[in-house]
Image (cartoon, rainbow, N blue to C red; front, top):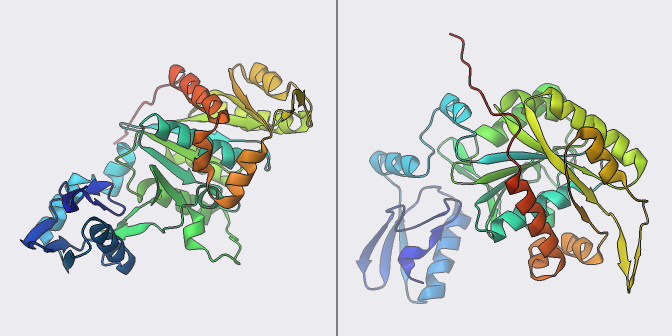
Length: 342
């Protein structure tokens, strides 16, 4: 790897792609400092010395013309209205929903994100569970988002782009917000974050049919939904309500994923939470059962360690890849229609 191919943190593009690198002499380079953030400069410097420990980087503030060119190159030159109007262009937007908490919705979202990344897709995750955010911990996405020219780059971990309330709230604080503030937060996560350079956006929705779910249906021209449930009847009953809501708003239900379906103990399979809930729910909603994820100690331990991406090397991940293949084969049942009234 050369100095020119170092990826600028947040931008998802190399220094040469951003045209922000100038060689001064054999060991010195000038780099445009787009963010004015110390840890970004440190990350670039560490990447450089990992290639050549004698190299030096000198940072310079970009001119207005240089900034304008970069804004256009990364798709951040749009007005707020242009961002909203074209938000669905070039990407698939899927909400991961459930009727109640504790069914593993965030884990399922993260697993699907890893599956799509494994298949070479550029993946974004909006952790829209404002009160129960957990995606950054599950994936180990520690680096905060990067402010840039009135927009923001999401946090990045491996090939995943993540936006979550966790980056804006202290660890020992609770988010105590009512409807209008929740609506504004979701609007910012969608339209002020630079999501242009992704193929699929997964939205980890809060459980139930409350303010955040309603806001998503109002803000997005169109999105799809996957319903997550566990096998027991009380989980599927409330999950059905989430499905009914999706059918009432501008969302197409792709299917149902049943989590914690069974446990493998040596050569035996047991069902600690009963059987058939996912299949029953899919029949009621008239959508396919995309798959069943076992209650697996490996998944749980990787989530606790913030290293869920390590699951990709294990046999169970093949099932998750198959779920994503099924999703790819299901076309949206409704197409977005943009109607503007002057």
